[in-house]
Length: 264
Image (tube, rainbow, N blue to C red; front, side):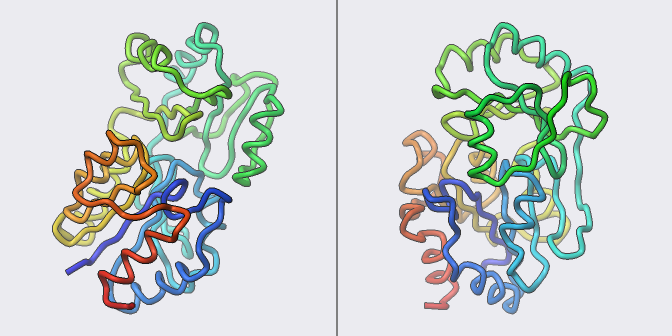
């Protein structure tokens, strides 16, 4: 019996046009009526997720910044929050000088940037990311939960190898898209967030269903028997899941949940 469902957004619940199938919101309300917890687990900001699911009537769980923040959508109650030390941020900024990519700091609700390129501004516009420009990252006083590199021309293996060798050992990194490398504290992951919620609500892995399409979703797969990789996921991501769902452009998450729950 399914008691808890969590899904990634981009490439999973969201189609290639950045839209969520409108019937998903009714589905979430139906799940709530049946006592099933529902969570959105994303690398996105909390403010983005809250806006994405604004039409859902009931409180749902929002997992932002790859697990660095867990909050309810309606009442805003924080269930978990993890912040990056300023010294670690400085170490990542130093790497940027050799790494050569665009650096973004992620606060709870907005991005902090210095001299953002037109490319990153377009990304922010497409994903509706609020951002604040600074002359220097030293000016940022707000707590930071995630650090990201935006790689305009796409992530290459040598970049990942460089980070493995040089990234501050208190941090970890994960590719969250073909142009995005996210860095968080070592203990942070979507899977860790799922584990926190399973413990809070006394839910076992056998009663948990998760969906994802990329490398930052693999830790979630380890926390659920009903782990679904999307058809559009890289092959090595698919191999980590127990099941394969359809394509994100064919409303596969909606169809899989609805069928499993007997709603269709």
